[in-house]
Image (cartoon, rainbow, N blue to C red; front, side, top):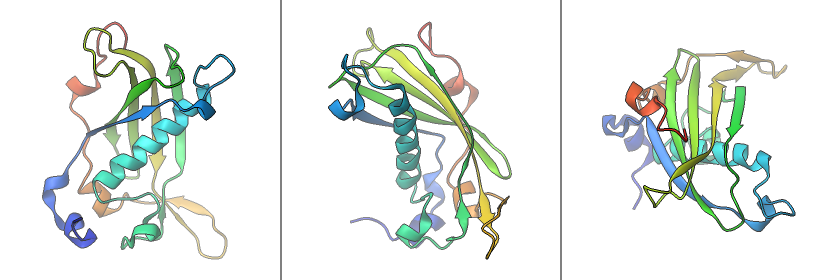
Length: 173
């Protein structure tokens, strides 16, 4: 049974700086050569970001989970990706999310997508990326967005990763 959301919000034991999940390349994500389309890497990164927040009892769309703060939004200020190796149809990969920096109004996330995640000898970096997401509030009536402080519930759960986790991971990183 899942803990009530209020208990997750008040629990100090859920601090995190790293998260990973797995995905398998679907046919609909590939081109005619069976290679995953470049745009899918960005969708995978965003899906992993949301899974990271969910693992901590958080959401970028809090109204869906009854989260107390229903006014904060999380647009992307910066998105980048670097592609190193293709992923093929049916290939499984690991998406790693690292919190690189947490400022007063923004979070910088680093992503690594790993090929062959179960083989230490064959594991290699397929792609890496970075998102900068900023906490905003919309002005009622105009929907104009203004940067705001990161909500306490996020700040209490998320911390920057130590330098050794953010450092390049060998010649393929």
